[in-house]
Image 1 (cartoon, rainbow, N blue to C red):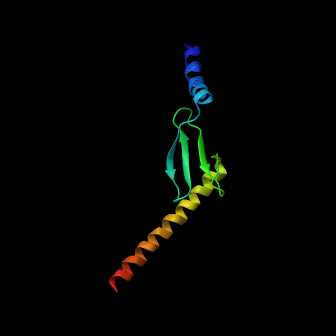
Image 2: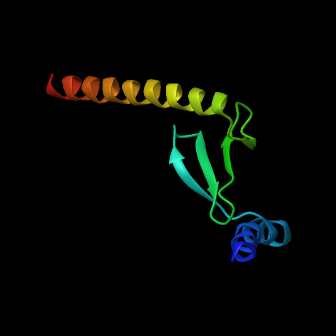
Image 3: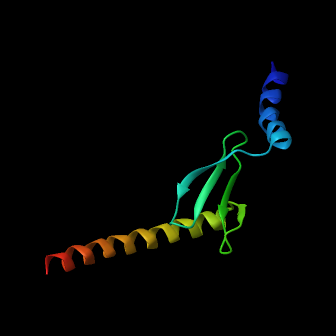
Length: 88
């Protein structure tokens, strides 16, 4: 029984080694920064400052969380400004 569990854990990695990863956007941090997850082996990537895909480490996860919070607060302030300027 133990062998079948190891086979199933090994299959997604083998699939990705043969056919390549199937990355899907798992989280939109900003318009340009996104987090991706492979649908088979669950490997996570993010975009760095140059726009390249890199592995999502705890450091980059923290950076993305802070960046998302800043982005969302700016978008909220922008909506408020548009609302106030449309009234006048």
